[in-house]
Image 1 (cartoon, rainbow over the protein chains, first blue to last red):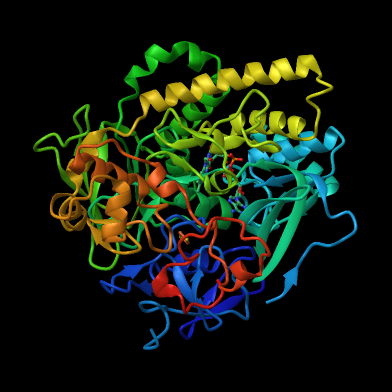
Image 2: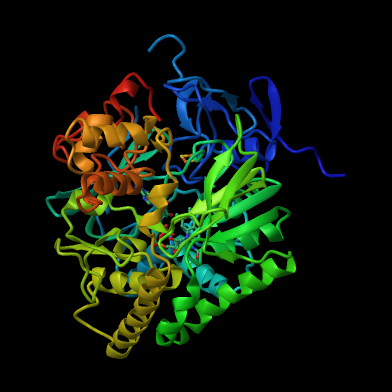
Length: 92
Length: 489
Ligand SMILES: Cc1cc2nc3c(=O)[nH]c(=O)nc-3n(C[C@H](O)[C@@H](O)[C@H](O)COP(=O)(O)OP(=O)(O)OC[C@H]3O[C@@H](n4cnc5c(N)ncnc54)[C@H](O)[C@@H]3O)c2cc1C
Ligand code: FES
């Protein structure tokens, strides 16, 4: 039997990933299509361009907001969180 | 933040290739074989660019079967073995320095500057997107985005997928999705490729490329998918993600045929309207551009792929969207010239490359003529449709800027509405805003308004100040003002 795939933490949920996958791709494979809300309309967003140019897929990675989920490689130690608005809580 | 000045003894190489896609890999290989010392820089984790995208630790799909994977293997092996290949290095600025050029890159949050005597710009393209009602819903992807998620990460965008837009690229996108477990509920091509007959000479001279298209159609028909022409996805529906799309039949000018609208259930949709060359670096260096056959701004080059800035060459989609085969030919020409091989021409080789380039450019031209973006798409918009995804600017806000506030072109619309001033700097909305502003104001669309960007990629704040000589004219902040407090990307 093959060992279980590695996982990273997404708001308390363990998300399995394949080596080389981005955080965004792993979330999508787990059936999660959005992880951000927009600043103005509070609308949900996920990935769109897949190659780092649209900035729709922004997410908080290890405490840093505004990371592009389609580019950040998934690693077992990564802590990934949903991003609301600008990603700074009430600070901005 | 750590700064590396790349001060190793022989840091200044002969040729620096920016981009490791088909064009960049071919340029680097040709330059190495011509005796130059070469550095290759790419933002991605693996060489190959968009066409040969593959997950780290694997090979491009179909290796051993597809004829071009042999080309990939040969090029990538040369680049790995005989050049300094820097993956994961995002170039945010290039500038002239005393003895050539400096490229400023960000690598894992740290700055790395690379120097070279001559440059080959091979940064490729991104999808050309057009706004439509619901295109901001999660589950809507650009066609290239869907393809890159499959090719690079082995993820299909959803269990039931619609594919729409225009151009031959829709076929491999749909075929890959169908072949890897997604149910393709439809492929909707807005143009009618009937007009191909006028372009037979261009087609027959590029039979290989054309047959690959036929192969995708065969794959689709095995999965019982028959692409529909003169059809389009004109709206996506759902509360928090795509649950269905509206599909319509189109007139030749792309307005909706009355009564043809139907709703098709699906979980995801991939939409593509061609590609837009990534011109930030060529424009920052002052390279002259021209309007390409598909209406995009492209870099002007000569027979050696030289731009009109001395020492700067360009190859691949930045010189006009024409596919991977053309990118490889242009890359080889650029690599030879940048290595100084111009003086010792292998005449036969040069003639063969130029002949092939002309042939493939004719084929690309034919494709652009058969699959243009026609003006009727503007009629699919509603006042509340988002045009700019980042700044959440609606169609109504843009029309208001023209009719109430006196905006006369895309540039003034941008200043009045903030459309195109968000995170993506107009990469996603530029085509749409320019077309909408032009149509409302009765002026020509101005692609230039969105092509120039102060930095090619977002950078940690404070980095700008560290470069002794500002590489670019003082311009807008590197990241949008509301994000000023953001920490490094
Ligand atoms: C998302 C996407 C997917 C595509 N998929 C296919 C496909 O499956 N099949 C197909 O036939 N065509 C595809 N294309 C079309 C594509 O343009 C090909 O024709 C071909 O890859 C073009 O080759 P190129 O070398 O000109 O550019 P690319 O292949 O785009 O290579 C450009 C390279 O430059 C790098 N780069 C760009 N800017 C920077 C920067 N500032 N710093 C560092 N590196 C940078 C990129 O990471 C990339 O690796 C796709 C296009 C896109 C946008
Ligand atoms: S999906 Fe576009 S930047 Fe990540």
